[in-house]
Length: 147
Image (cartoon, rainbow, N blue to C red; front, side, top):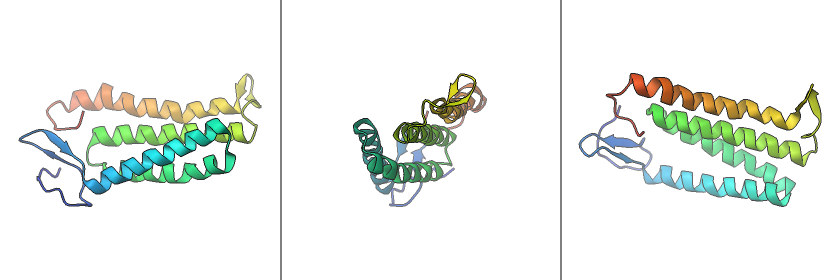
């Protein structure tokens, strides 16, 4: 784990052990902020039923989410939360597409509709966070993490 106090652009986020401060390089913060913009445009498009824009916004939203998760992989707490966000966006995007293309209420099997298949990535996100809070965090009590 990198415990230096350098703040050069492009470096991984660091934790200063003395001050217990989590520092995010400005290039990471800019990407996170841009991610929020894309995410909002995706959800506004869903709400306003602007199909082409909503579907187009899936790609930058998901791609940036994956990049953020990859860049923070050295901290299990950050990785788990960012992976949960990625699968949340995946579930949310699938749900949006199912409504846009009008197959959300069609039956997959029994009483299960296509829209409800979004529960698969939602549950994966919950399982990732359950792993972190119920297993990893208690087992690694003495390790420096962001949570």
